[in-house]
Length: 356
Ligand SMILES: *Cc1c(COP(=O)(O)O)cnc(C)c1O
Image 1 (spheres, protein in one colour):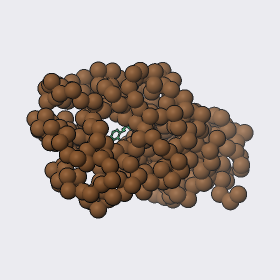
Image 2: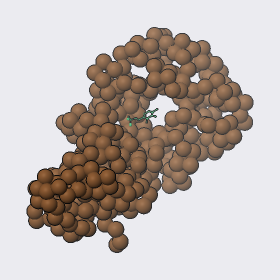
Image 3: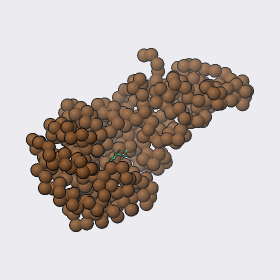
Image 4: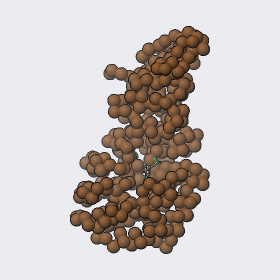
């Protein structure tokens, strides 16, 4: 072992989180969202922890093919569909469910030479204004797709922009319900926030991502503290240096932190090149030897400094948890002005990952 920084991925917690989803959305099938390399956890590593899911949803064809090659025979949904018509033969070969969100995709699907029809998710824009057709076109498009020889099972899909707010899906739900009135279609609408907090949106398939990994869709751990979700990723390291500061001594680049009196600090082998947020301010929570303390000074590329005042026994080799079971990734993210999603996805390739 060289540098002590390490990420561990807890497959047991992942399985438990999937059970929490099942209890939150009884009667709905579950797309486990594993885009962005399973939110930074490693698709190849985590998919087995999610083997009891009903399907996997992602963005990259490469990741979809990897899952097929590993032996996953169930449904795979590409959340943005194909990016170019020339990918359709691979959708056909690997039996992937495609989203259709634009006219050009519909046309390409119509014109493709396939061995068998593909299952299709028709994406409606319900207010996010990223991808999808206007709700008023839903009925016409549904009938149009229905008539294509290349189209198998169809599901109506939409994605909420504000599902973490208590009344955040009302407008979108009204639009979707109006647009699909009288249409007997299966539906997939709910992301993590809607899965937890808006049961009226559950429909046939829910699409949770972040909660599978044990972080909050709102960015606030308190919002999911009682849901039974367990953090899946732990980022840990060790203290590799100790300094005793005198009043007025400063720490790190730019000297952002100044000691008010004598103070011991520990230098931790983790920096922004490992994925720790450079914007973390002084006092960002960190666990040293099981004791909660805070960072001091600007995070460097390979190191950061922590206050050892609450843990005088700590020294070289003392274990540090940057985030995980005790230090919630949501809390680190909130301190740094971001969300758990971004920190997970930004875990750097140079950090070794183990499965526990
Ligand atoms: C990422 C994504 C999800 C999952 O979102 P979470 O907030 O992580 O639950 C669901 N649906 C679509 C279309 C997505 O892009």
